[in-house]
Amino acid sequence: MTTIGLIGKIGAGKSTVARRLEELGAQVIDADKIAHEVLAEADVKREVVVHFGASVLGGNGELQRQVLAERVFGLTPTHAAALTILEKIVHPRVRQRINGRLDHLQAAGQATGKDAQVVLDIPLLLQAGWGDACDCLIRLECNETVRQERLKQRGWSDLQREARAAAWDRRAPGPPVPEGKITTVDTSGTLAYTLEQVDLFWSALHLGRLPG
Image 1 (cartoon, rainbow, N blue to C red):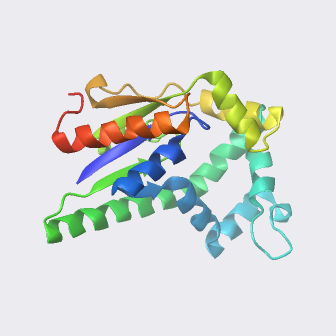
Image 2 (spheres, rainbow, N blue to C red; image 1 turned 90 degrees about the vertical axis):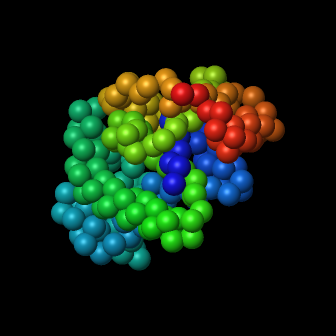
């Protein structure tokens, strides 16, 4: 099994790259999707309410993710502390599910004799300690103006973008990674240009011509 990690800031295009790799045949493990599933679990909701109050619940009893995001993403120490609390609730469960998925794919590959390619789409992948689990990394480099414009297109306000940037900066730069494990993809240009680079990476991966 070959594990590929994606690294880059929010809005840099990780989802686009992951989607293309999936089209090419890779298995994608999306940590954000798993986190949403975890937040829907009854015991997790109860624990979140204990720390953040019933106001984070909607009329249907489900967690309002936007309300929760406003509580944990911000520029103040209070926001930082709240984010730490939420991560302590959610992250261990997400990590457990990711490890379970990796184990399943590893076993399936051994049973079939086929080498699976697995993509880890995990925010702050290096900072979360997943770098060593990856055989290679794709670093997404995106012009800052382009990245900010993409976030605006999501409907994010200036304050929301500043809050997410602050959360990123508190964890930057993350542990060092041997350059031999990294392939850089420029996501500043057109979609076609990004996909072309991903296709070249995929070809190099199967030909054994990646860096290192």
